[in-house]
Image (cartoon, rainbow, N blue to C red):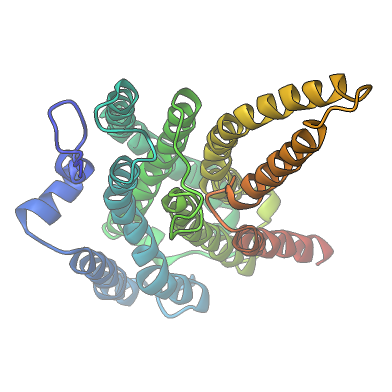
Length: 380
């Protein structure tokens, strides 16, 4: 059984080893996924409700304090729901993307371990992880966050503060702490999005260039490629989590009286979700579908060729009383039945259609909620 841990391939722990954040927590401190998620939630809670409570107590202006429904509700939501989703997605991706490729290599879907195609698959998988761990992506993510806060400072907050001031903005020593609390989560979110897109594109290129082996009776009911469907479903759940961030953030802004159609930050969240949801669910599934169809075509090709040759021989014997004609007809019937059997048993999707429909409908819920919020505001 092959493992990815070779000199010319990525190991199943490769992303964790090369990611500075996860390497510190998981390899140096020996923390588990649960420890990291709980620590980050506690950190956000302390900064919001510990340090933030001091800032709110010091605030003497007429604006909102920590106890206001909008601020308190969203910060509780961030600590107990959104922060765990963001960090859970970040760690899940680091663990599962190498494991997915390793699983495909182990179960023989990408060919025999001695074949040149197998070695090509290893090299391409290593290239995928190298691109996912592109170091300038951290700088790009940081710059995007700076632009996000600049947009809020120059356009979003003036509109918001024209309606009501905020303690976290008025107490200047607390403002950087308040922004940092959100920035930590937004940073891992941007890295997650970047790596998800890179990995999905890498899978598309991998399956486009390599002929796979589909196993019709594999226990996963997807020809040995069920891990792709499982990955798509799990990543979609995290994408839905992003959609919940967009909806909750937009709701908070709307409750404050701001015009959502003029808030570029809110619209950017919705836009990212609209792009990310199909990338997470549909792109991995349909990238492997083409390879599964090619594999089925390879099995059907000799049957089609034999059927055509047998049909040609039967046609030549139609005008004569040839005793072999019945045998030829029987062979044609058997070939046709064999073809139908292959069409029925060879899967062409790494996920059941019913699951694909169910998850597709689920992915629309945050989008529908966002559209409803905009519609209600326009009506008001």
